[in-house]
Image (cartoon, rainbow, N blue to C red; front, side):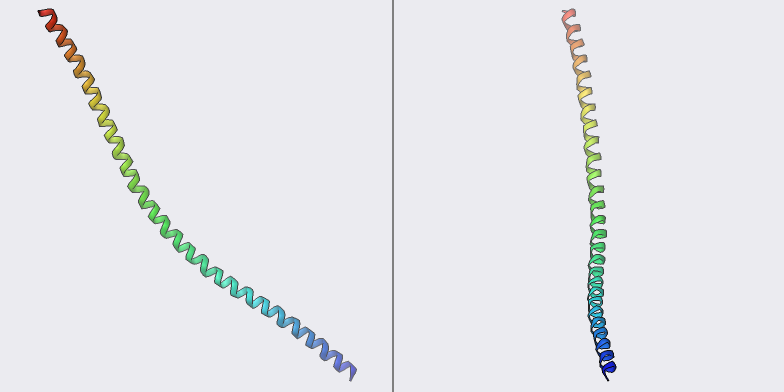
Length: 99
């Protein structure tokens, strides 16, 4: 009889420990599942934001290209103005010499 009681006590202790561990493992599994859903949402958000950033980068690159073109044109106009100024100075000197 004592042996049966001892055996029952050991089994009850093992069952209690098993239940405790099972509950902890169940909670961990639940946490992992929730974290997985959170990570999946973050992945979707990251993909969406990356796509939006790529679009914005493309627009900004286009604007930068336009600005570079405008600067080149401005440089061309400045060069043209310098050439015209030199031509006018030559004409002015020529007119002075003619008089």
